[in-house]
Image 1 (cartoon, rainbow, N blue to C red):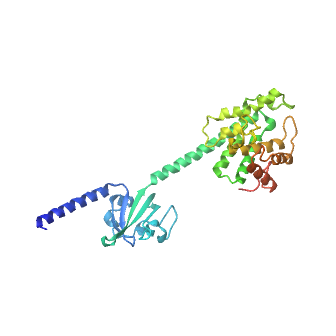
Image 2 (image 1 turned 180 degrees about the vertical axis):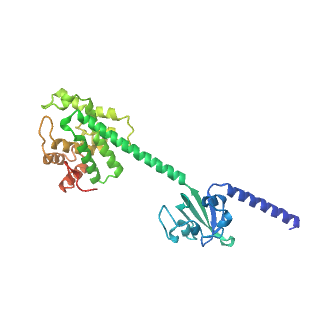
Image 3 (image 1 turned 45 degrees about the vertical axis):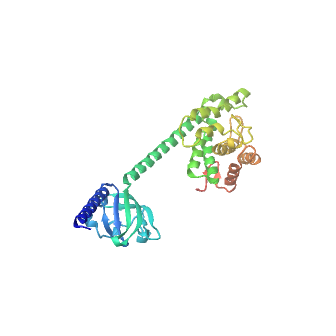
Length: 345
């Protein structure tokens, strides 16, 4: 190779290295090269800015001396951290890294093994700052929590407004809600599903707001026409709730809680799986509470009679799993209509 060719090659290499360095320094992710002892051999400007130190001061330093071991807020032994676990056998690892100087920042880290011991490094680690995303997610979750709380409050106010028109059955919806929640928990439903059943049950009779109060509180047997008016409350409840964007099938709970598995219920005559699971639970709770409690036209029939009704018609009118769960929580004493759950679940 002639001196001129050598100079041209060196110039080309310098130009290429310059382009690579400019490219690396233009990315926003922190990028470091470290050796097997986790000492920094090179870092980009973004990583140096994350730590608030010049790049030159970071060279040769142990990564875990300048960034104390932390993963999702928990202290770790060196060998437990994803960066330390990367080697010839485990060639890549991903995790979250929390670093605190003046402020706590959270990074997603991706460490990869590269077999370049001759070049002085064996791992490439990328740090992506997700602090703002994490904060935004936290604010979103807080906002969702406030909205859920407001939703629960609104639902309870509406429930009380309905029952104010029918003082004789005051508390019915809350008791049905409490029992529905206990049944769903006994059936192994998750917290989100249980909450949906609970809230749906609180307003399952909201359609009664359109039934004349004198019919709701009539102390004698209803006429056929009056009974048909009362039966309309399920569909009326659906119409009231259907346009509200609940995260649960609240409108269908109101619509279907008088449906029966064999199709003998109302208003649609649905059968089996046509009825939503939440409404099947509320149907059982509604029957037990209604039969046990006093009504304007009759005295309460008692809990034993109510439980006998769902047991006899288990699988015919009422969902098998919901009935079994209901019978169990009363039998083992973990629930009572007066006090709700006696055992925290």
